[in-house]
Image (cartoon, rainbow, N blue to C red):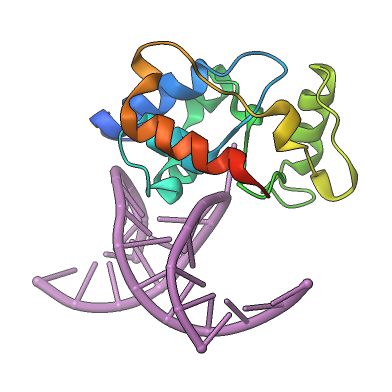
Length: 127
DNA sequence: AATGTGACGGACC
DNA sequence: TGGTCCGCCACAT
């Protein structure tokens, strides 16, 4: 299935995903924030599962805020785990990843808007 | 036009 | 710790 319309949100979301460095991960909410819609995590999930060109994105670097792989077993879970492991990301039982250790923290211009910094600061607190 | 559906997230019991 | 509810986005019915 393809995204019919390339809206600013879907475009920015994809750009944000492409910006995630190897060996690091980002959460759906984080990508949403980078795309200008802090609370549109669902929209990000939608962008991924409905894009045929997701194959051209480092989609495996996107996980949920609990640090876990959201895909179910037999529905991509194994593939995502494999891809992350191949980049050196330790994925434990249940597809758990240590966000403290692997979460991407953009420090450059575009990604450092006040809203984004605030969002990331909140994530660093605990969990 | 209205409702339903996700690879979500956070607030509130 | 764990459910439920609701907002978010774009698309499907």
